[in-house]
Length: 492
Image (cartoon, rainbow, N blue to C red; front, top):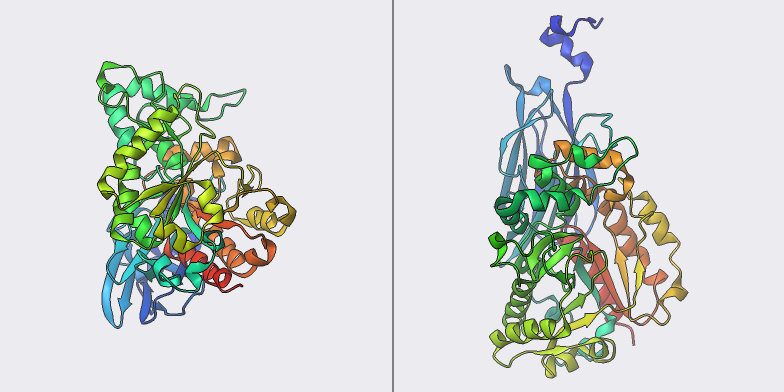
């Protein structure tokens, strides 16, 4: 019998309160000879070596398998390649409260991908809140890991120069894409907060919804501003150079100048004329830095082609847009590093040229602006915590909507931001390991990626480029896109 006076509970009574912490584990491996080992105290390690399967497993870290007085246990992930350990990350978790203690993947900074000449290991850990939390977020911790090859040259491998595959139109490819590529760190926001905190905070306040009874900005302000940005806007965790190695080849970029509320302040004179990726009014990666990384990658990998789609949806009017001259100047300046080895292509070349034509003409950076495409996304369907509405949207794909469009974009990321006030209140407790973007990533991918792998080509038969887009670029998404590319290149 459980005592009603919690203060009188003995250790033996706590079992009635179910003092365990569940960890939902999502795995994808496409490297032969690799195995993934997941472990918690008191149980045999879970070892996974299946190839090209999106698997979901569950571990329980139980109090009885930890030691008093703290009852902490280690959750560990190891990756072995031909029996040799190449990756080892861990977290100490309290079995009773679920609180994270110490470890090597507590924050997104800790969770950057392992990149080597042989493999890429992408992973994320979501520190779940208690069961019954107001936002309806998962109450099991969420962990995913993908193991894939180093994909620096995947186009060269699929379609070598002079091959039959390379003689096919570039539009036959399925390109892995980073959703909001420029929001991969808090660096720019941190600098602005340090220099003009009050002015920036007021602008960030404006992105949170309001109810008739309460301005959520009254709560989510001051020291909590980084939490708001972390939860609502940080959609990637790796440097662009790593995303490219993992396999991403398509990027949307929304270049604009800082918000007028603080752009002209003397503390920001060195940033006044710099173009940044804009997520609403929140600045991320610099456009010049983005172009520099793309061109450096293409110079190192002469068989690869990158597509950049410049657009401004969601950028407020208070963030001035660049002029055509501004954009051309940035491209010209960045291209100097290629020393003549690279030309800029555009939409016409993307839709009409073969893979080898683009290589021969050195047009391996394709830049287009505000191009009309069949975008499989809606604020309603993608506002989800479990991905089911995204799958329903996929099942209702209208093939005829590809007609007259330059390409098709399949968006797999959840946009929990649109779920209402409750999800925003979760930002009060947000940290670098429990934003709502992390909460939905693995759950949704475990449903969307198998669907795309098995059904996308049947649903989308149009002879046009396909783009597969997601938060937190990973090896599973990229591998699916590459396999679909291979299938399309085999067609006459």
